[in-house]
Image 1 (cartoon, rainbow over the protein chains, first blue to last red):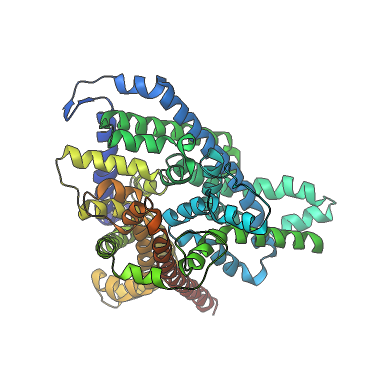
Image 2: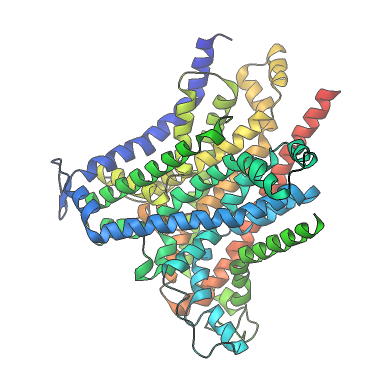
Length: 285
Length: 270
């Protein structure tokens, strides 16, 4: 087939989905960016370009705190999720035997139950009169309910690690599966111990999966709305909660847009820097 | 080696318990005969499920969610199939960048998607209703559909298509009679996963729904009332069972797809 025919046929198929993405993704992002340079006076939009919203978004302490907290929470969640996910993926890949598919299925099941309800259940578990406190009380371990469990950043981190675990396990598993097992035999034969074997062969070769997992978790986590709202309390709120407030109650859509654009810039820059510094692992991809 | 294997196994099992623990609380407390969610359990009861039968707002929300889930899943599967077919079959200018662009909603924070879409709808002066949520969900599900369909088309043996064309079928006939049936496990997987994602999606629906609540938006509104807690747990149990059935079906069709491949490989070897 000639290239021009390939071109025509390819675009004939891709045309509609591509236009759909243009109208529902590109146009909205451009509109939101435009909105972030405008201001709003009660209900009327003033369409003169100004950096006022960005000045507020970047320099007001409230927003700075929220951005910093969202970033720290996201990074911590990403770190712990990968830390827990790696041994699981490793076990399934190396010791799973014939039951690999079953193990993976078991791990993904909880992920397909409502995210909203799972996050809410953490509130029920950690609350003052919650499952954990009533359980400890019943056992007689505590006399007063523990209050440090809920409504802080740790609760947000715990709930998010729980919610995003499958997203880390699957990509890491896939890259572990691709490792040529004869490399491990060779290193065994040449006298490497299992510690060296892990750090010199398995970890570097599984890095593409780890990098994928980091991006899949870090980027959406920073914009999570449900979890901080349910289990974060006032000290655990994140930037998404502020964006929603600015959009609705505070009726300042341009500021909400500026906060959204800033969040996108932050995750975009960090994600690109992360991929750049790890590019040597991605050479074959 | 044996000992480390055992340690690993116990880590994996405790992690599985951690993953399942919250979800297991749903059935436990939805059958508990008490208004408070706490231990010790007080007795077995089904009143919380019965209560669900008389909630009209719930039934409304469920209906809205089903309309949205069915429409957006079908739309997204059509779009995803087109993208996947173009991606696996043809080489053309701008292929990589345009397909990457279509996959972007996969990692974009949902709140950003919600804010963007809301901004446009407001600027255009359009009313928010169920259809705005359908558009948002279609955008969100299309990447998932695309990935599933790419793997379905990758398993397709191109010689069957060529044979059909050689034997005088038109390309449209070939598509309907040969290609589509062969990727049907992928289509069904895509429909199931899209349906589950849409039914569960909260934040885009929360932004775009206007006055008509979807199921997650309804559940969110119930969180404010402690008295509604046990019946919300009961609703969660029902949803859990529905997702389990759908995801098991998904797994079944995914394996059929794999079997298909292995069968294809065997044929090639002969």
